[in-house]
Amino acid sequence: MDKLKAIGVSYNEISELDDDALLKLICPKEEKTPSISLPDFPYLMKELKKKGVTLQLLYEEYIRDNPSGYKRSQFYKLYRNWIKTMDPVMRITHKAGERMFVDFSGDKPHYQDPFTGKQIEVELFISALGASSYIFAYALPDQTVESFVKGNIMAFEHLWRMP
Image 1: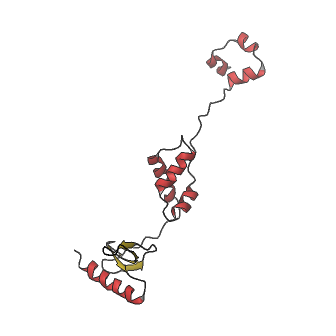
Image 2: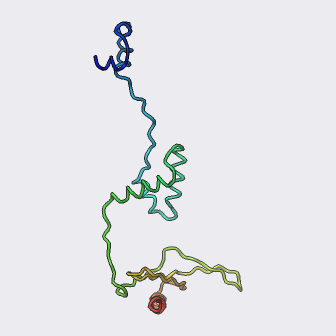
Image 3: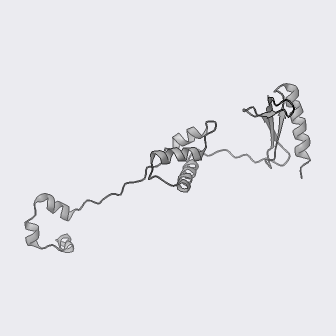
């Protein structure tokens, strides 16, 4: 009875209603606003591991498929928050001067010979100090042991002279 009083409908008006109309009056269905579809986070994480894929490209794909979806900043925030829920990453703290990591890059850069105009592919040797993350990169002709040793020596000399 309290509900009927709150609605402000008289007994005579209620008695004239059929069952469906009475049900709608007493228990109106809440109109649900269409929810914004969340990005497929596992898909995003998998795609980001591919060469040349960025979160910006994935956002453009998402907004193409969901025109009324999240805007870029919210999309990025949702992804960063989701990543935080994933398995924790082991953090390693390095003492200054304790570790230097070296390797060749996967992609082969090239340069153009200024005299012949010929493009010359090279191997990119990369080194990084563990504590400071200072990096050193140097183009070498190949990935032979000699080139690897030369890259290490050059990186060591360059990185250890930095302030």
